[in-house]
Image (cartoon, rainbow, N blue to C red; front, side):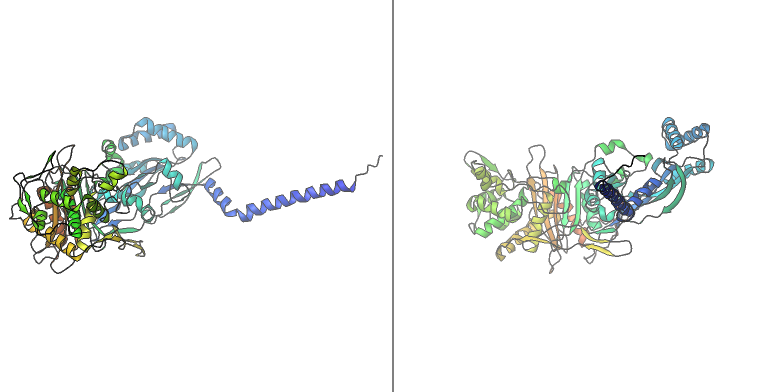
Length: 623
């Protein structure tokens, strides 16, 4: 027998390797059982369970006067649990019965059922079914074991297109949204999320906690048994600053206009709270959540999502004369008592610039020139004041800047002036000054910017960020958020400038071009306008604010009617209707109307009386 000698060093190396392996094993065990235990337990549970989600009700949306404009309705999904129907004949019979009820091709249903039975995994055969369809399927449920109906919550907008561009809509997540939200356990690939408007901006608050049916499956994913059903929890409720009566008046007025296109914005000049926001053409957000049997795919392809109030940029026309007037009064280069003669045009040498009143206004001073929107008066004044001063005043009034309302894709418009031309190394001509004076040329504003401009006149130069959420409240009444006024900046003008501006705007409504906006018992200050449009008929503008005597202004309104031609006849009556709706309860003879109302454009709950007829004559012209 040969005695082999093994050196002690080798034995030491072997023991070291053994200890190292044991240490690695121990560390892995600690990692599995202690450090990562919860994660691996979750993965194991996911492998062991399958969830059929039940969508929770989204939070409701109310106007400031408690009208629900977004709620939820029950929706039903049809689920097939395999295992109880054993033969092909039974599955084919079920497919045939369901095809008649669901209007789904028999072959599609048959293949789906056979695949589910073969893999022994549950399948959702149909979703978003109406109550009437669910009732017709109840009989099949009793005949064919394994077929079940689960109830879910479906978004519902009671008044259809009402307030659609502010509320927005929801729809199924796309791939990009799923990748960004995939880590959130409250979302699945079938989840519906906000796509536009406040549905998108406040998705986190509106989204409830989904419920579901929890199923136990084996290692191959085959159904073993049902474990439990977990209830959903609704999302938080949002209360808007929108006044339903003002919103209804704005929508009905714009829908009844000559073209039914444009925008209306009403805000509270004391805070920036949005009281009405209309963009037309509009759309019914119910189209995206319609029951399966009611969906109209053609309408979905041609959805008018463009928000005219925030994204539409237009020449401001005569409302810009407020800016020119402010520059005139601040510089003092034109006396308010100085007269300019208006023969119906201004001769600039190489070209005659016309006034909207072809026969001319005659001699015009400041207040008369503003009240009657005399273009020739403002041509002469602008040449005296200088275009740079007008441009600077426009920038002080925040034209060319977005208002900052928390909605996506707001446009900033464009301020037209000599400094911008100089930056482009381009010439500035006398005709540019004349166009600038009356809001033509390259100057562009949105209806929201126009509302902020007239609001600043109403409150003495304060610019607030427009906001539309008054508060957000959880189901049990717990407040999550409360909206508040946020000052962006303010413009400081002489007291005499503000007083004369207001005096002129009051005269516009009392005896000038804005008489269609007069309201008994309410002081209305406004400015009409017609903006030339090279693509068709002129656009109609009217901006105004209103107050009850002895009080501060409570509403500022801007109205744009695309291709409406005349602000006096097309836009001013809409502003009047909005103001009347807001002041109706404050006036001695007013009667309150609850909620949205019946009109030409929308189906509403209760009628609102028509505006008081105006006995004054409205001048039909470019005003």
